[in-house]
Amino acid sequence: MNPYILAILLFGLGLGTTITFASSHWLLAWMGLEMNTLAIIPLMTQHHHPRAVEATTKYFLTQATAAATLLFASVTNAWLTGQWEIQQITHPLPSTMITLALALKIGLAPLHAWLPEVLQGLDLTTGLILSTWQKLAPFALILQLQPSSSTLLIILGLTSTLIGGWGGLNQTQLRKILAYSSIAHLGWMILVLQFSPSITLLTLLTYFIMTFSTFLVFKLNESTNINTLATSWAKAPALTALMPLILLSLGGLPPLTGFMPKWLILQELTKQGLVPTETLVALSALLSLFFYLRLSYAMTLTISPNNLTGSTPWRLPSTQLTYPLATSTEMTICLLPLTPAISALLTP
Image (cartoon, rainbow, N blue to C red; front, side):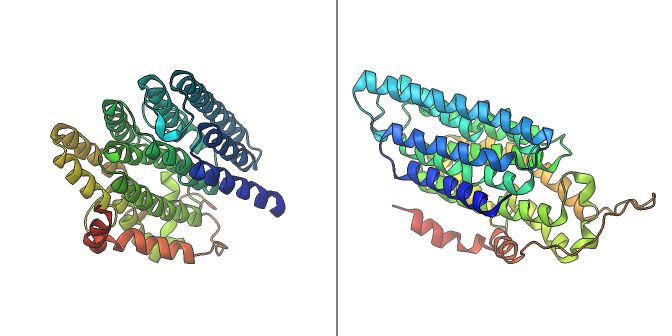
């Protein structure tokens, strides 16, 4: 892609998100979300592959549906209450509609079906943008919105963690596994949102760091399914040794960074007296942990069979910058000891 066009599209992505962040009026927030969607569509179709075009079409249709629902809900709210302010949603009908529209935008279950399919059709770089940056603007709106129904958020969160765990179990495609991982993590964030927005933001930040590391490793190895992971030991042995730690951090095992947000969320849910919910969520984390272990096993404990001539992929030196990967990997593995300091910062 022409670098000038790429720069304009990335600027559009940044501007759309910034407009949504800065807006207190629903029309302005809607406009920022639309800019975001329109800026990423050319990035998604840049390879002109039928799968990419299909993924882009699915993405456009779901985002347009969510944006139309959001606009309709905000107009309904203005009609019922005379308010366009984001924080002045008092009527339960527009509040519920907006929550569901934003859930569709970020891919929360049961409105998640588009996310694995779309992510599977994209290259890893665009997939990374879709899994991280594109979640920011809708999340900013969900944080500002005080939902009238706390039950709705708990149902969305629980369904997302369970479907995110179950859905990834039988997958062989790495991008689909990462999509289900994204759904499960978003479920954790939504569960604790109404009780502690600061823990939600912390979880979002740690999820971004861990996902960034995972996508960059797969991009470095040029892996898109589980079988191709087996050749990574020959390309980057040191990184292959660290990769299980990154995956287990995504799964939330101590003593890795990913354990910190899960620990704080379970603690907060206990304080709120939601013990059955907390138990279900903790058990759903085991489902996710299974497919992270499966990826770790495929990457470090198996060797690719080279029975046929020329079945080994070319081992050309990678042109990818490794500084961002080194930084994010270190943060993915080593930040748990900072939990007391972070907890102190989060306490109002």
